[in-house]
Structures are given as structure tokens and as C-alpha cells.
Image (cartoon, rainbow, N blue to C red):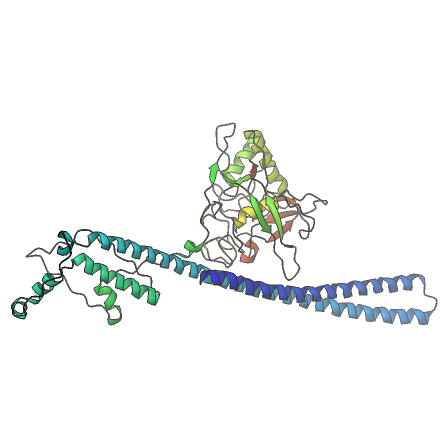
Length: 490
């Protein structure tokens, strides 16, 4: 079932997305071409009015034509805006479908894990049953087995029922318990309920003491009696995170500074190939999706904190950034410009002898995705208790940043790559990834009037925390939601 879902689900959603993209992209291109054509005609008419008009009548005719072209252009622009808005709506709808599919896939994987555990338990029970099966009298004798002797009817009638049963059928209490458990396993496989199977012991249970207090009988509801009477507890629900990819083992390191203190904690990533960006229906700057090869590098497990940045300020005599009344210490440093963040990385380089820097945009997205393909490192849909943002449902939402590490780490061992403080990266901003490096280097072409920031923030909507979402900011921006984390060459 799981394999069928993985093969058919994404294919259906992907086919729908591809068809929508094709139609809407064609409409968008046609609208852009028409707007460009009308702009050219407007420019030609304006030039003609200024340089080639020979009479008042001709001037009036040209002005009327110009007014008509301007109205047409306005209508085309409105149509283009409507198409763009429809693209965004459909893209959000597709995102919701991917989120629902992701949740269904996790539920199927959880059921598969429960079924696998039950099958393993059945095999273990079979082995234990074979071990505790007592040898029969026939197998102890030498020679061919002798069939059991049929007792006279009178002798049978003179014996108690329990004695007759144990004499004719020497089955141990452990074997009976084993058959009862196997019956419950069959019930579990038929009904799909998660039932934890009891482990049998080699020794039979000891009989109760003669004068012990009798157990108190508790009457269970009729629908639950079969389970309650067999003393089989319900298994705890498998958490949804069990269906997530396993956390990759990472080595973590910290470099010592000249004064003996330690620098930021770094996660060592081996690198690899991944798909960067997102093919947006509305033609945004997050695409096209393209393959990038990332080499080995290290990146901060947390955003740089006020405590770490303040040490740099005291050592260099720079200005202390404002904490906006939230406190310093373990909160991510904010209110720093791109050059402030770059200077801190250079200072770490001089202090440690290792090359520190801001991560490239490709390195940042590779690290933030943590090996997944979802909109967030944990999947496609927003989940409570994962991050702080405008609508994440935490005590810090739209109020302040949270202390670093307040939420669970990603599969790469990184904290707060979604939400909390938005993070500067090394790249100059360009609208889209056409011509972007495919080897993970930062994009530095252009005049770098704007720089790129990633990861959303405490006062930004959850959509801005998606791993592929981008923001462009002036390099001298010092905002209360803008910080950074450092990278280091391996």
C-alpha cells in the first residue's frame, strides 16, 4: 500500500501541477508579449507626436489613438494581474494538496511500522512456543511412538473434568497463553488496531498464596471485554516523526578563540546534490528549480547569539546592536547589517585561523532542507511547535524572537532554519536563478544593490519560512527580525 501511494500520489499531483503550469505560463507569456507590444506602440506614437506632427488634425488623431492604446494597455495589465493572482491561488491549493498527501504518507508509514513490529512479535512468539513445548511421553521412549491409551468410559466418569483434561491432553499453561496471543495477533491483523503483544516467560505464573486477598474484578465495557480479559494492553501511538527520514549522524565541532573561549557550534555537512528553488506558477523569483552540487562545509547549528556577537563588539570596538527590550544572551542577534555579519565572520577567521564566512544561498537552502523535499524540513504542511513566526501558534509569535534552540533540531542537527530571525547569506540578489552557479558558490554578479536573506522570522507569515522562500534587502538594513548564522570551510 505504501509503495502504491508513493508511486501514484506524487504522479497525480505532479501531473496536475505540470498541466496548470503549462496553461498559466502560456497565458502569462501572452499577456507579457501583448503588454510589450502595446508599450512599443505607445512609445512610437509619443515619438511621432513630438517629431512628426504637421497639423492640428493629425495631432488630434494621434492623441486619440494614444488614449485608446493607453486604455488597452491598462486593461491588459489588469488581466495580467488577475492571471498572476490566479496562479498564486492555484499554487497555494497545490501546496495544501502536497501537505495532505504528506500527512497521508506519514500515516501509512506509521501503520507499516506497526504491522512490521507485529509480524516480528509473531515470529518471536513462535520461537518461544517451540522452546516451552514440553516433550510428550511418546518422544521420550525408545522405539516407535505409542498412541495414547483409550481409557474406559467408567474410569473417565469417575474422574474430575480438570483431571481428565490434563491427563488426556498434556498442554502447558504457557502453550495455552501462546495460542491466545496468536489469536489476538490475528484479530489485530484483521482489524488494523495497534495492540502491544505481551512477552511470554519461560516459567509459568506462580499460584496465588492460600490466604491472599482475592483480586478485585473490574467489569469492562462489552466492546472492550475481549481485550481486557486477555490482559493485553493497547500499544502507544507511534509518533508522526517515526515516518520522517532518520536523523543523519553528524559530527559537531567548535573552534577555540585566542582568549581561550569557544566559537559558534558547527555541524559538519558532507554535501551532495539537491534540487534548489521552486517552480512557482506565478513566476516568482524562487525558480527555476535546478540541480546544485554542494561540497563539504560546516554551518552554525544556531543563529549567532547576542552573547557571541557582543564578544566581537568588545574586541573590535564596534557598535552594540539594539536588543529591542527582549534581552540578549541566547537570543539570536538582530539589528545587524550585511557588512556587520560579514565582519563578524572575518573576525572569527582571524581568531581561529579557519576560514569563516556567510553561507551561500545554495548552502543555506541545502542545510535548511535537511535532506527532505518538503516546503519545510519536517514536511509540506505547517505543524505546531516547530518554529516561531507570525502565525505559528507560539508564545513569541509576532512579539519577539525566541532563545536559540527553543524548538527541535532538523535532521541535520540545525535549529531555527525556519522562523525566529531571518538570516543574511553571502549572495547578491538576482530575480530568479537563471545563470546562478551550480556548484554552491555565492552569486556575486551584478552591482549587489540588494542582498539575499532566508528563513522567515518571528513577525513573518509561515509561508515565508519555506525552505525555498527568498527576501531581498538593502545591505545596510538593520531590522529587529534580521540576523545571521556563519559557515566555515571544511
